[in-house]
Image (cartoon, rainbow, N blue to C red; front, side, top):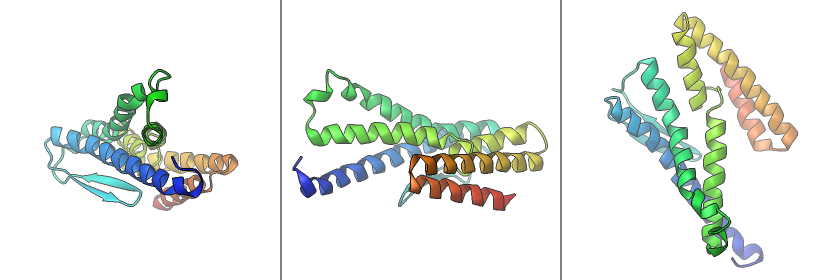
Length: 184
């Protein structure tokens, strides 16, 4: 890569490509399982994420848990596919732009997948915990319990992010804690 400020546009473009591919793969993971469960899904991509929607999917808790887990699983699968390019034997042979693209794909899909599985609504882990809580008792009480778990976890991540110096994550998870608390 060119040195100095000339490298920033290319690195930014590579990051945008990695984010776009990662979001699309994540949403396709949901959509493929929605189709498996009888639905006709569509995907909407927005600035920092996406949504796989389906009006006619199986709404059973089992199906919804599997569908919710499919997005992060697809991201982990993408990370596993590019992992061989990150080994010590192959990494030195990569061109510099490909080296950065593979690195971005690894970081985004592993970090994002783990964060997305936290029991924080509306993230996939929050959807999973909501379904589990509604299975284990009264659906209304289950939703309230899942929202309390979501609020506490989101607040905890916000505090951790603040201590780690990540202002963006602190704002994002603080906002999710607030939204979940408001829903209670």
